[in-house]
Length: 420
Image (cartoon, rainbow, N blue to C red; front, side, top):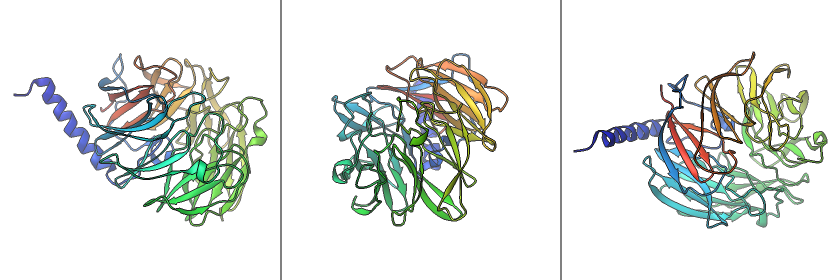
């Protein structure tokens, strides 16, 4: 007869598998939730945590060194990490933390801040992932078998910037899209089925940045927004035509962080917001009706998010800013006007996501996590707890799936129950 604790764990597993399957079976599941916006389509979550934080229901050690967050598909947890010092490895775990398979998919970044950077992208039974040195792989989600693999940076003479390749592969219809940078191309599109080349863009110069591209729909027209170390660019996914580009490096006036564009652009209501730390101003651009040009709307010097992402909630942007590489505050900016709503100290800068009416922030230096009520008036912290497991910077973004909050710290993955 099962013990009470084992019975509860079995029930939780069944519930977790049911919820995950219902939500995610055939969707694209990727970095930072819905369209890479930092928003997770979850409901029924706690609006206040217990005094010591939400219940920790799973701890997985030995996932490999890294800064990427996991994804959950049909109850299976997928996460990347560096193992054997030089290999990026994708691992699959069940709800109990048992290892189902692990696959080495390329050489990791080895020069600075070593740790896996990339969250896999899932669609229709396949995982798409890139290594810290620019190898892109398609992997079977059930078996871990590599279906195809291409060394994009080597094959298309791309150029990786100072701290390694951190781009999460983008699915655009039948294509896997990846930024190369360099003097020959800016971006390539591969066929999802076999990795063969479909198109490549011309080069606008500059290396690839740390930011991942996003796919948007503007006036019934799809376009890919991507960043190099010099420009924000828009690409037609049908043929690789560069529709327009906007020079970002002109605002990189300090000697530090020149070219370090870090966060996915946010698109809303025909407008685009980009931000990247290092005193580079957060900038909002308006797209023309035909999608072939942009015009600057405003710049804001407060919300220069380093690499923790920003979210847009009910007309206001939320994130942290950069004072230096080791310090930053939290801030909110009005989407329409570009005026700063507030700027506030809370331990240190970090990452921000949103689900079910609440912000989840994860401070990068000491591992403090907070549940925050969105407000244009002030930073309204409702509950907090501190991550004590793992080592290294707390750079992985929080991830939310099936009523669970996932926090990755280095070699350890933690799962908290945040269901109401």
